Length: 446
Ligand code: S3P
Image 1 (cartoon, rainbow, N blue to C red):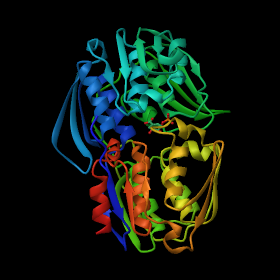
Image 2 (tube, rainbow, N blue to C red):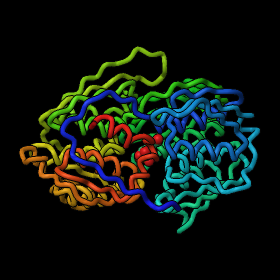
Image 3 (cartoon, rainbow, N blue to C red):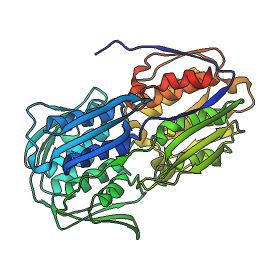
Image 4 (tube, rainbow, N blue to C red):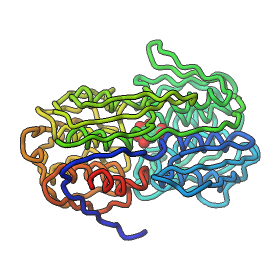
């Protein structure tokens, strides 16, 4: 493994500029996987060029799918052409499929492979090896696939012995997780009958939208649960996809722009899928001045530009459903809370401990090192904001990112707000989802 690269971020006197953030990570993973399942050629424009999506691309190549990159990547976006013999023509991989740092790669591919008659092993880096897989093993076994994992079937590496057809099931995930829902739906493509996922909190719906767009009968509706119902045994058609910017990447600039006393930032062409944009609503609830300008597009995913200006932020209260809807944006939101008037309380955030790092521990430690007042009680966080202190009471310090991209970017933005110099122990992880993050940071703070 390469030695970590520290980064120094200095206080910025003002923040100005217009940015295009990388292509959406969740949509890019799915566009690659669905293009590989379909027989024929699919083009994916402006997809994420982050490490995570490249892990998915490499794993699909090991299964016999051709993925050609077109043109140089630009600010974390790249065009790709995928040519596939269709899932029936995939070859059994002769090496372990390396998902790197990416939970989405591992869990979504496990779903696809469960319905593909071959044997494959999915593994990842030290962080991924600490992340739970029992949540996908249980439903995929019930559908008839054979799966085994380390530590009594709880942790990667994960062996999947697929079969087809699989049995149709109704699944009620025990934790809100789009990765689990997607694994079951992707396995459901090989199922005989109707597959249903019933969620207590609706998670991001990219898989459903993208399957529908590719000719699969998927319906979403609410009864006592949020229900996704899919007819199994469907053929996925190839389709071209233009990927909007990643709202989870935009979130760092929304927080930077809203908290900084002299800021105006525009994020162009960001995905605004209602199941992903809750960070915009949460920050607005905190008083953030965010202008949303929707773009007219014929893509299945809505997009628009976001302009954020310096705002007086105030504390809010988040429940477990708020956390689930903004699961990847909570670290950035914690920084906004440190700059707000009053105490922000975040309840039921336990799932954050299962991400690329223990994000509850990591955010509390890093923000506290910078001078913020953060209290953790079980799975709850309380952040006492210091809207009126100079630099919100934040002073540059050395902070640990725990190799987690979202912590690294949160603390880098904190460094723009804090007095003096902030040193991140390792800045490389930002490229997991946002290659070019530090170039954009220099651009807006120059
Ligand atoms: C993702 C779902 C989320 C999120 C991850 C991407 C996806 O995970 O944290 O970054 O693309 O489906 P969970 O659904 O497991 O919470």
